[in-house]
Image (tube, rainbow, N blue to C red; front, top):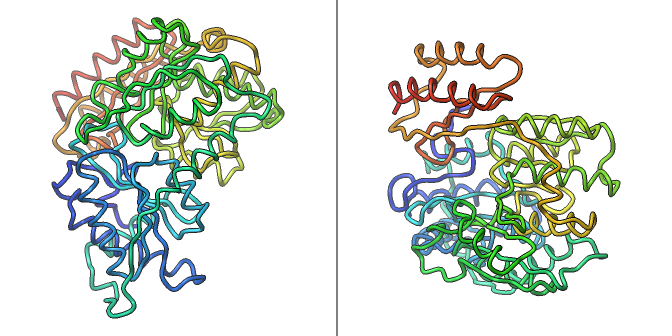
Length: 454
């Protein structure tokens, strides 16, 4: 398989209007996606492509450029306007479209942007398909030229918003509602700024909404899942039952308990595993899926429940690929990407928040009581900005240091060193039973990595 040039762990991402996140590339990708999916479905002559976006200023440019590429290759476009990434995945399948596109850079600042692609069933594309798309972007001569009546068209549909709203509400067990509950909800001035508050209010909650005034440049700006401090303060001020912080495209969430404490994503996975087990959806011996960044404490907790745990590469699409192949129902990442395969084909922040509500109501406990039953190992995660990403395995000083620190950690800890798939950074993660040793090992590795790559 050809090494991918544009695609990272979650679609194509970069600074907006700077290669490869340009209108020209978006146009070429629109052509490539249309041509690829034209061959996957013989039901219709012209492939139907759903195109959604978050609230970034550059989304206007990329939305129009991508749509133009689809039309030039003979596809039909449905523009949804701002809608969460999981909403695009759901609507693509619901409308029996051939593919769905989300224009978003997730938790990144407004000046970045990205493009994520879903197939007809609402799943992200495997590596080999992304490589095939790249071949067509690089060499447009591989695509036939459409003319006359073979050209496509585009239209904007507002009603798809409601489809996703109803879908998410249905994920909450029919026995429960949110009457009498108070929720602080931070939508990060992003894709869920309309749909998420409406969802919780329609279920009966009193909602205190933050981050619901997007202006094109304030998405993720000191708000949302990366900046939960405002939510923590408001939870205590309003005596809320919980706080929910979404990221820019609302495919992940951070939960804040009623005491104003942020709950780790791995703790959420542990709580949801117990819920699904007690509800009979999971049974002893079933597998929950995480990544190489998942905490050892999560793994130990799942084992205590009689469940198995499997780690994939970082990226929710790799989690979902494994879940599909092995019929797993629950997976997720420490960052707050939570996947309930019975309800969704990708990470969904609002849906995960509703499941936390269900967990609270099912056990008749506070969020702090539920999450306090799970103990994670001390873990340190540091990021170092890099200008390029040479293979880590080829750097001898780094490999020597890795061998040394891994020996220090032994069997009671882990060390992970990896490049970010969405940002120009290298991530250093160390975890273990001894917090002092974790800090010492992380500092030692950081110093070498900075010297070699920083």
